[in-house]
Image (cartoon, rainbow over all chains, first blue to last red; front, side, top):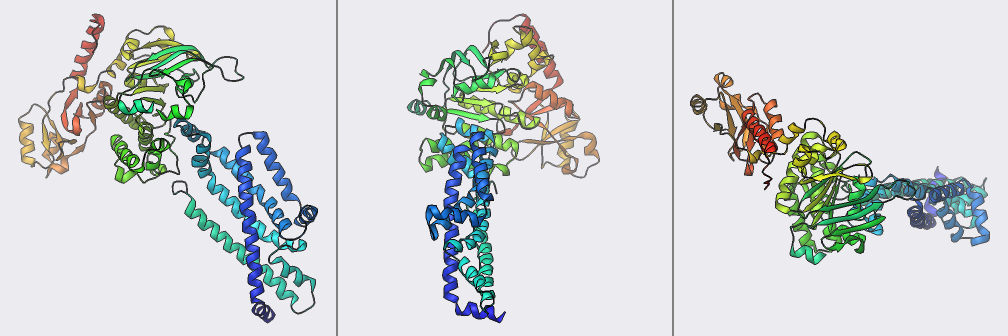
Length: 215
Length: 390
């Protein structure tokens, strides 16, 4: 236990930097995945073939082991930040696409009919009615994706990705030395704590951005 | 179209359906088959028929929610098919079953939606929303900032009507708007629609499968058969008195003569005076009123002259104060029909329907004698028609 504290005290600024990079990469990946996922959902939800295809593709991606996916991305993106973020985006897509499609299909047809009947165009109906109603389920998909990405990013140290994975890998690489356990443990604990923190922030965002009428 | 709306804010436009057909892709039978109908300005026209007869499709063609396969639709003197659908729909009010309010928007946002689409300025929209909520009987201060789920079904339906009226459209389409509320609320909403219409004079196309509702609300009823074939298109009186064929007669159903009671409004018969006392009157003066009249009960009004209770002589005898002897009272309005009045007469132990007039003030009572006189008069009029209708 003393080793752990000493390690944290000594590497305070390095840990801060890695934590920042870790969170930053996850947040950016989930944002990109949300934009792409919602767009795919919106474009496919009215066609059952297209929406099944989109969901099936993204669930196949999710079954590829993280280690393998990162390896497969090296030829495309090289090493470093880009393949790591690409992997996170790909993993985050499934929950977001699926929740968007399921949510949009669950919107009461009477409401879209009312929107049309009042003279709203396709885009206005989508942006002012449908997506507003689906927003809570998109947000819950973002929470799942965020939690998942926090863990997956640790493995991205394997392709020289950013974040806390580096100290975990470094620690595991020197098993036997006195700093090995503190390094791996610190990295892991920080990931867990930061994941909970991010989740809390997303819940708060949900509170602030979801209409009281549908909460 | 918009300019025309503003110069004549409160009058309806004529709608002409000219040999309209609708074939859904992949369907063998057309949903609407070569139907023509002339809907006069400022009237309530009811499309009534069995489910699946295409009446909703026919209504939805007027605002192009359903595009006709062939035929012409004129609104005012404009060809509806030449106007951009979103623009056309903003100039036509649209109210549907279960109101279809957007749950994530406040009542204010829901009602102000079409004016917003028409880019009215904020202040004008806010004023209009207040005015409309008042019009449908919802206090703006209390309801404007609530969400739909915080309202009862009947209140939601009122908001739905307010939303449809928001941009003061000349034409209103209503698709079974009162289909999902309980019968009492339904009847109240129907009364209110009639009250609104007597001020607004919109052209209203109203779809229902309930013939009773059609009789109550319609200036004219179009009884539709399969593929929206017009079986009969006439006033409720004419359809009740003289159904065009067996199908219409079957749809009108039995009890047509009872239904005729539902065509006469309380305001069109002579109300009988009945003694009334004030809620704060002393027991003594109430006893005196009773003693001086031929009745054994009196109406009790509140400080704004609205009938709120009744009290019977027998009960008064054992009471210390007037308040102890009060019994609750159901009132009918002058807009209610004699059918409603009959209902009230049968339900109340004092065998009368107490009527509230303008401002909900006490106006008199309707008794069984009133109804019998009216039925007798209707029968003699039907036997010797003068052909002289208002």
